[in-house]
Image (cartoon, chains in turn red, orange):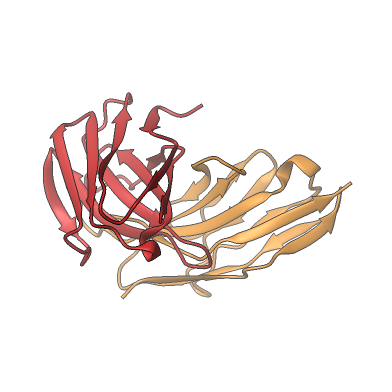
Length: 116
Length: 115
């Protein structure tokens, strides 16, 4: 059982649509992440939020727009996507580690996105 | 930059066979190492972890030892079950001093256990 939920679980959209992915964590963590999982490729880090501020943006196209309104919620707004953006989008959370701890991340089940 | 290399598979074994999935890494700092497992239709679950050299992580019969000299973190299990069929990911975190950071993942190894 995971303390990170994602909705919707499946999404099909056209290239001109606008949609949003939602992630919610119930673990009291203060850092949240978006990853993209494509077939035959390693998981790709997209965005990192720590204490509700974006701390990393891994050269992600502007058609992906993240939003973190509070430490429990993370959104990924999608617009004008391309078919190659079809993938599993995974959200994760962690407690921001200090110098002596490690970065254990807890993942949600993902949203399977298909862009037509 | 950091990287993780693991055998991609698929790896097909019979039930009760011995399992080894190799993982090697490259990191500039002194990373923490993880194995995650992904069952069909689900997200990633942490299987085990190790944070310093010679640490052994273990869980559900799986083990992996952090080998700094060979930069490796191979996953092993003495007797696999059909329910172990999944994709296994080796990952590292190389934060070096605190702060949130993404994990660096290998491509994943698809494990298939046949009855």
